[in-house]
Length: 413
Image 1 (cartoon, one colour):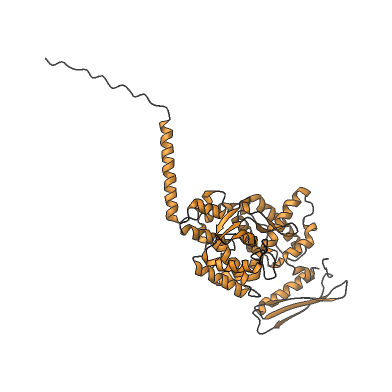
Image 2 (cartoon, one colour):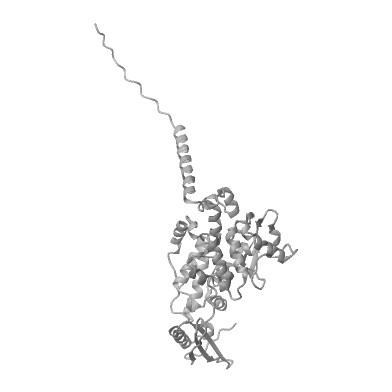
């Protein structure tokens, strides 16, 4: 794709039209003639109010006066970044390009690549970076994701699409401690019960474009197995054992070079996960539907494609739905927090819960225990420290007791 650059001061034809019956009834439209082909091009946007529509038209006129085509100004970030990548990354050493490219492809594009450049604000960037940190990415990984985003947005400033680069953020390293404090109680991130989960699943299906029931199945399966969305996408028919009703979780779908790829689970740990009666009928129906193909995917999109957390978000209008239901801060990953919290409350021993979750450290699993049970674990740890300290003192140098004072007896005559 070649960037269209009209001459400075290009004239736009603009209009705002009210269209009754649409959720966003005010259509703002700009039209112009391409200087090279002579074709008449246009861009439009449906907005909720007349003021917002007029503001969008005014912004398009300002951008056009700077010599930038509205076609470029309304591109999603992913498309604009691909178009301007070489220019935005100029001057970088080859060894730096690889981690920057991975950060852009694996984290920036799935998180905010669908947004147009002008609507990306400081708040959007802050929440995106916070999400990366909360998902467990290290400081180096987050740095290599912020850096290419910052360069692409800086190029947008030079192109005149935006006035200020929203990706110039500082202090994000301090967020690590804040997130660790929050995740010290991941129970706060969980849905309260099955009814809340069912309401969420049904609302997501209803809000999706085609009301695809599979989105509800994905959400219920993820929460009831404490699985990541990528792991749900990786389920194959052969991974399910209907005799014992267990799922061998051994792969996940994740963005990779050239598109989505299947690879081992996080930490490369295979784990057996129980399938509770509440989801067995749904799982059985899906197994019956795929027939005798052991490698058939159990969960796909409406057209048979692989699922990611970003695809689920966009297809179901996740952000809009969770706000309407009163779960403003609920992320797709919190379905996993929900499942682990429910299992802990059900009394599953912590060492078993650790295996189901695939945690590398039992300390991570202990965070899901009920506060009362956790206090018991902490009391046990305190007792262990006390005994350890006592043994250490017993093994130390022994003090020689001072001799008792000599008492002189007085003879009584």
